[in-house]
Image 1 (cartoon, rainbow, N blue to C red):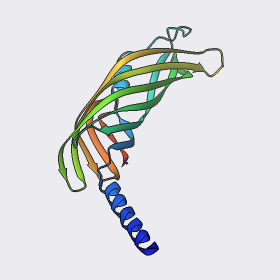
Image 2: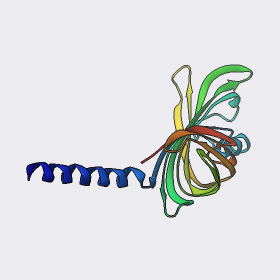
Image 3: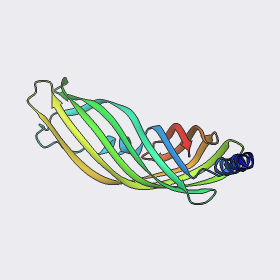
Image 4: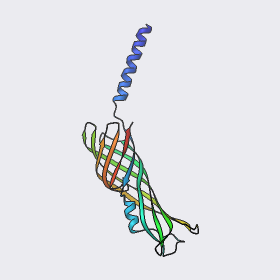
Length: 196
């Protein structure tokens, strides 16, 4: 009798575990890095005024480090997912006065967005998808001079978006992705994902 109970228990556990592992995973977590996002483009044409800064100090030789993001999506259907994203990007520029470097500007963007994704081609471990998102960005511009006389910053929020017509995902439950679009993720965005 004990052997029959043990055998039935093992068979039930095998059946349950087979069903658990065969189910499609609905949650996706991703981490990525994007280049040439709209935050960089907007700030090239319209930088905020730091209130305590003299008018003659100009920004030059800016360096951007790209944006990094952490995203989550939940599959509502086999091909359609909704989720969210948190992104951060940082850039710095020299502060010049009469041609001399006198300080440094720091630009930071904090972005939160809602996103929708649709998989339109699937073949084995390859998926091609499109993505769209809308959210808000808090932009902070700070300046610090080398003499420690001026240390000031200003912040402004604004609405931001993402349109990604081409996204390529490689891997079934763990893998990488490469995206081409326009918005807060960048013109080119790449990273890793895991489904659970």
